[in-house]
Image 1 (cartoon, rainbow, N blue to C red):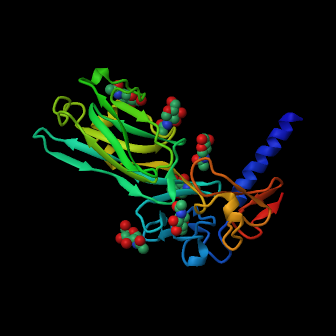
Image 2: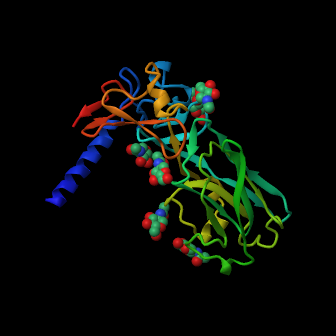
Image 3: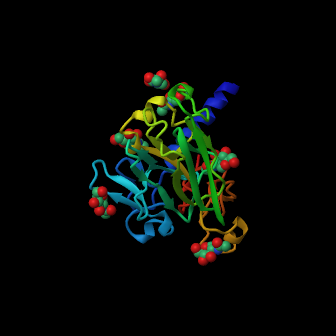
Length: 285
Ligand SMILES: *[C@@H]1O[C@H](CO)[C@@H](O)[C@H](O)[C@H]1NC(C)=O
Ligand SMILES: *[C@@H]1O[C@H](CO)[C@@H](O)[C@H](O)[C@H]1NC(C)=O
Ligand SMILES: *[C@@H]1O[C@H](CO)[C@@H](O)[C@H](O)[C@H]1NC(C)=O
Ligand SMILES: *[C@@H]1O[C@H](CO)[C@@H](O)[C@H](O)[C@H]1NC(C)=O
Ligand SMILES: *[C@@H]1O[C@H](CO)[C@@H](O)[C@H](O)[C@H]1NC(C)=O
Ligand SMILES: *[C@@H]1O[C@H](CO)[C@@H](O)[C@H](O)[C@H]1NC(C)=O
């Protein structure tokens, strides 16, 4: 009986996920195979709640690719539960035997979206590596990690142990993200097995460190998924309710306080499912 109930609620959850991805009526529902649920939207301004939630669908690609507003940040998945998955290039700082460097410092500024501090890790690879992120969380912050090693045998292959690969949590509330590197010896002491430093934020569980990444000439071209948290506006639930014209939670839904940012989220009431941001979006189960 308990098992059956558990299975039943699991099925409901699965159903809820599949019906939740609804666009506003009359608006494009998908870009390629990516569903675009309201408050996100593409096309005309009625299709999304405000400019931050615009998805640009570029049909030059086959299948078409979705991008966040007017940025080059590719969107892989949008959830009405308050997060989205993006794909973002990694940053690198590489040296040759003459000490010349070739680098790419990744970064973006989002304003309305936060890099989830619970669902991503900041990861740096290298043996002459100090990688740091700078940005804004209400005020300027800087954090990072460093890794120094002197030969390949010291590096623990297959796990990010702090030697050759280091990971830290991203601070809460980060909207701006700028990644930079420094090294003590421009990799000259480790050039034979580690010519580059790499740095990236990545969704938990997606990246597994391998020593072979140090000498992989294509590693710098990789892109990894990052989870961003989104919320509506910057008001509390109480403030938002007092402004019914702009209140985003529709019939049979409740306002919820996000754990991971300012503003609010909406959720269908118990016994209802669907998209709480659409009029009549929450339907009786
Ligand atoms: C979309 O298509 C790509 C490749 O064509 C695939 O890797 C990805 O898993 C698909 N995403 C969804 C949500 O179906
Ligand atoms: C679509 O992508 C192509 C290739 O990256 C780019 O040249 C073009 O400007 C993009 N179109 C839009 C509408 O963003
Ligand atoms: C490190 O581990 C990966 C698999 O996790 C393996 O493919 C690779 O050959 C190993 N490299 C060394 C140098 O042991
Ligand atoms: C990383 O390692 C874990 C555990 O060994 C494995 O379950 C997972 O599939 C690996 N992920 C990738 C992307 O290789
Ligand atoms: C809240 O958002 C509005 C409009 O986007 C903006 O004008 C205002 O400064 C914001 N307030 C705070 C406290 O961030
Ligand atoms: C918000 O943070 C909590 C823990 O603080 C985490 O469990 C949850 O997954 C996060 N939510 C999102 C949408 O990232």
